[in-house]
Length: 191
Image (cartoon, rainbow, N blue to C red; front, side, top):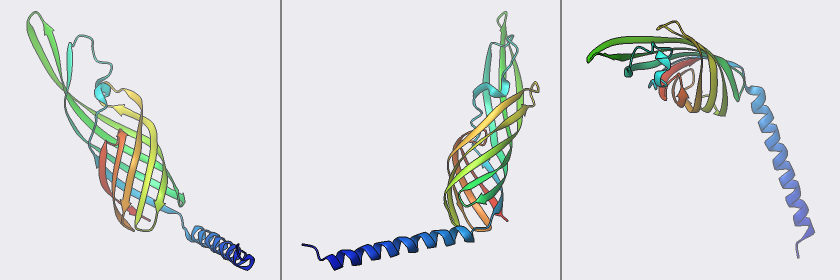
């Protein structure tokens, strides 16, 4: 059968390897220093339908979103520990639409542009975090003000996957759903 000395030898090797692994993880955890990130991203604005123009007069028969400007977001994030980031986002979006009114076989058209100014708190889970590379996902929520009719609404954004590449000055790409855009790219700086 098995040699008893060989089994004891392997148990000791496995135990020593596990202890060495734990010490290396603890050493890496001690080497982490909290960091601050400041980033600017530009994303494809999905306009989230008619949210820009909610509360329209019922006098208009049709409303068409004509075009959307890119979503601009400025984010400040603090990394208290290696795998968590907390912070805030400031978001600016814009959309223009054409409103049509049909009365007595006449069509009246009015073009309107609405801007969104929002502030959200955000939390990110960072799955891989090295000095040059990170993979993360996140959740943001807050309030915004629409310039058209001065509506104030609750807004949010879910980042399903984000990638950061670079050490101090870095580039970032994010895919998500919400007010920061469906797909966004930007630059940032880590302090």
